[in-house]
Length: 213
Image (tube, rainbow, N blue to C red; front, top):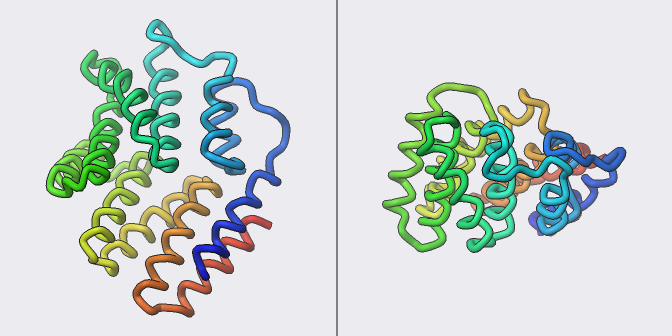
């Protein structure tokens, strides 16, 4: 029941959108603040950006573009798109021109390993990412906490999963990313409901509905 409620309010987020962004950074900010109607639409918005990069574009633009594509592909469970976006991120990381590319690629490889059922490899990649990210408060840190929550949930360590999800939630609020906060609230509803914490799950659901409004 709670997951259904959350899917409904997540669908309300795009109604907050204003204007039609055309550049990569405009699309990124739009999606962080307002969400998107579907993963497919969000990826098409990125690909249609007027400054969508190629191999000769500035490394930081390539990173912002491909890291977002890969994040959306993970949400959409699209392994083919994940692998396609991972390749340029790996190339950037090897070039030494993109410091955040290394932890980003580790987190992506961790997700691919989870899909393959190789949780040992996934844990190794998550630990590598954690070392590279350190204590920085960034979107990468949110991704790390989310990956840690997924691994803990797969291992049936639901209390640990909630702890990591709460970290992601608090950081998304600090960075003023309502759409990312909405995704995390969705996870917390499910995790708390699975542990039998119905009142807490309901509270997270209500917070999500309020956020969408």
